[in-house]
Length: 212
Image (tube, rainbow, N blue to C red; front, top):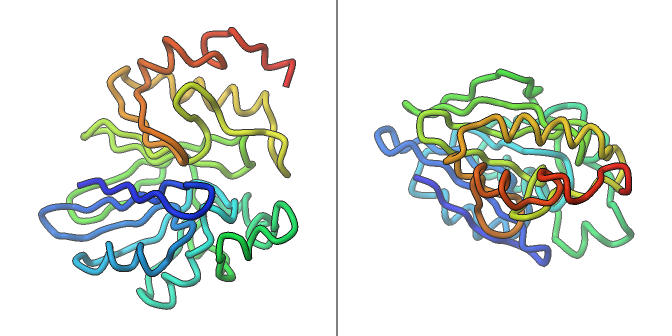
C-alpha cells in the first residue's frame, strides 16, 4: 500500500509504504507537518525513516518522528552536510523543521531495505545532491525518486553539491528501468519511466545539459 501525503509550503511529497501482510511501514521524506504524518502512521508499525536526500523540505520532520516512534533513520551520508544547511535564510522556520539527527545507516547502491515481506532496493542517483538516492520496488514496479526527476522536468542543480553532468548519469539509471515503472516524485504528480523517456526534454535531448 502506497500513501503519498503532500506537505508544507513547497508541497513536498512524503511517501508511506505499508506491507499489507505484516502492517509494517516505512516513511520516506517526512518534510513538514509532522503531526499529520504521525497520524497517518499510527495504524501501522513503522520500522524506518528513509530520506532520498538531505534538503530540509525532505527531512524537516525526521527529528520529530524519531522522538515519537524511536525508529532508525537511513540516508546517504554524503548529504549529511545538508542537515544544517538552511538553503536560504529562514527556510527551516518557514517549513517548521526540527533539528535532524545524523543517519544511523548510510545508504549505498544495492542496499535492500525490508519491511514485512516487502523490500526496497537503493539506487544511488546523485546530481541534485551528492547523496541522492531512489528506492525501487522491483516486484511491484515503482520508484520513489525524491527530487532526481519530476514529471517533465528534473531536480535543480544550482544548490550546494548539485552537479548537472552527474544528474544526467543518474537519469540514465532511471531510464534503464522498465517503461511501466511508476515514478513517485518528490514534488508534483506521479509519472512513468516510459512517459519521461518520450517527453521529458532533459532526457530526449531537447535541453542541452551544457547550458544549465
